[in-house]
Length: 383
Image (tube, rainbow, N blue to C red; front, side, top):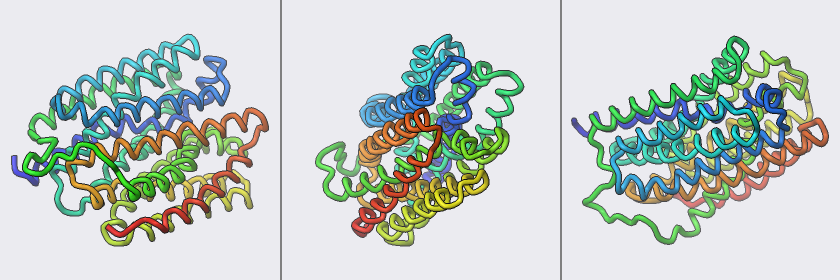
């Protein structure tokens, strides 16, 4: 297979495997049905989402060690089995602990490993427009949620939440097996053996600036993605409108991630980062000034777009700042900031809602975070 075809195969494998795992971002659709089924609180459901992101991040950081020792085919099959069984366990949960174990502990690691494996494979094979390619790969999670949210909403009404989760587990298994077949056919080397390996080491000031920009954007963005449907309903939106809004928001985030990758191919990272956080700030201010269901959907979309641009920026600038052999290692470390964001403001937002019945305080926090993000992003260096 030619180098160009290997790049196409890597992008296709990333698409197949990351779309179903990206339904993590449609978790908000499961909030009310699972709360009713298990008698769980909003804060407890926020904890499960946070736990899933922790285990996903653990998988990301172990991925470089794994793909240097095991073939991507073996990893795809093993991760599909673990994550699929985790969703099956969550589907049969009779209590909160079992649901947290299945969705929060078992589903996440496989998703994290394959996310980094897919990115590493793409960066080893794609030569031109790497920012755009990386933006596309990271867009697949919100795009998976965009497709998944309406399907989940329909399936929960038609069949119930348990069959919906079990069906997702089956889709994950099939997707991982398909990705394994693509990676096997492409015969992609996960490391360029002609270049220095540089598997670890000191990351430096640039990394920590990028991590701070990513953390701040993800704090607001993940709050939106994990609770979008519930937030819209809290501002008076009907259940069907809330599911539609979630679809719109996740689609906007996916498009913004592609756009963020394209932007860093053409503009300085600092300018892109400042603009992204300004977009999120505009969304927060809109929701504070005009708290209606329709404005909530558009405001959350703006916050999500800001987060999406920063996500594409982060993936694209890794390809600019570091050698391609280091991509998986640096990306895994960077997503620790994403994980910290996921267990911060989203969980706090759930706790504040349980106490006050409102998301107003959370929106104020998101606005302050966006201002800080603009200040930090302005210090990002040139490529």
